[in-house]
Length: 129
Image 1 (cartoon, rainbow, N blue to C red):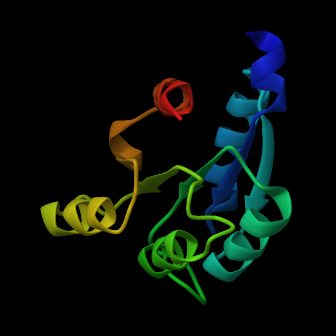
Image 2: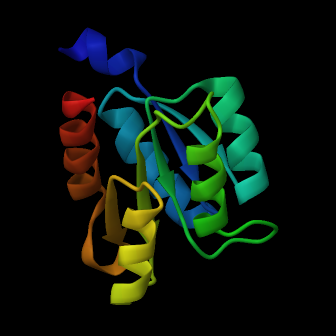
C-alpha cells in the first residue's frame, strides 16, 4: 500500500501559502507527492502538466476562483476525471450545492477539518476511483 501511495500526486490550489504549507507537510509525511498552485489559472495548468491523482481546491483566489476553476477542470477531457475536493472557508449551503453540482467529490470547510482528516478523505476518494 505504501508503494501505491508514494506514486499519488495531490495538487493543492490555494493562494494561502501558510495553509498550503501545512497541508503539503502533512501529505508528504503520509507519502504523497504534492504540487502547489497559487491561483486558479496556475491550478488548471498544473492539472494538465502534473496529472495529479486528486486536487484540493480553494474557492476564494485571485485571477480565477475555485468554482470557475472546477468548471473548467470538469469541462476539459484531460482533467475531467481527476477527483476534486473543495477546501475553503465558505460554508454556505448554496456554495456546497454549487460545488457538488459542478463535479466536486467533497467539500471541506477549512475551519472544521484538520489536515489529518483531509488526508483520510483523500484516501477514501482515491480508493473509490
